[in-house]
Length: 279
Image 1 (tube, one colour):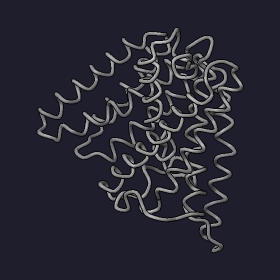
Image 2: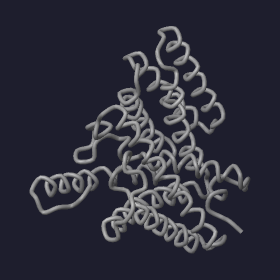
Image 3: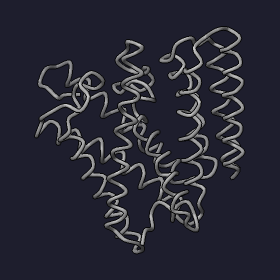
Image 4: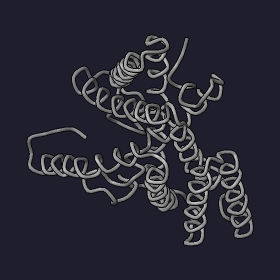
């Protein structure tokens, strides 16, 4: 959103700031607490995401929304118990059931094929990372820091430098300068996190953080594409001044999955070490 002196945009900016001041401390506190408080946060978010996704994708019915929301809640409950693989299987079962209903009704099958991974994978990934007893808290806060730094640095770099757009048909305000600025911000978060931990290579974590900034921006573009296809500006109206929950977590959805894949590839002693500690 551009900041301009006219009253409408200034009022919207004030609303955005007030909403963030109210919601961010709650989300951060629950993330810090971990365990079931963090799971409760993701449960609420998954239900909201399910309803917003169903509204953006074609052929959805009340039954589709309920099934997607129930699948999200099941994944949260199972993953919070430390059974991440079983949680993914539960999500896959929900997807198969949704596909069966779509085929029976003759609706588009690509919608659940997108919706279920979009909801299930990031929720399971975040819980898997946070449950690490040694570095789970640090890993999730690092991930949040990357996404927020990417958004903030991209915004100011894009406004200050401008230049060519990345994909003007999907997101007319995002520029290559903004992407590079976001990568620099994410790299700074990674570098600082490694120095704070006192282990691993700050340069390596900075590099992987910058790469995750690209992943986060890709998540932003995916949600923008869904909204444009549905002909809406925001995914919902849940958060005053911000739109829907998907408008706030689009980058985190992609970055969480990317971080989990990094941890799996690294095959370190724990998920937290897999994303934070590099030789």
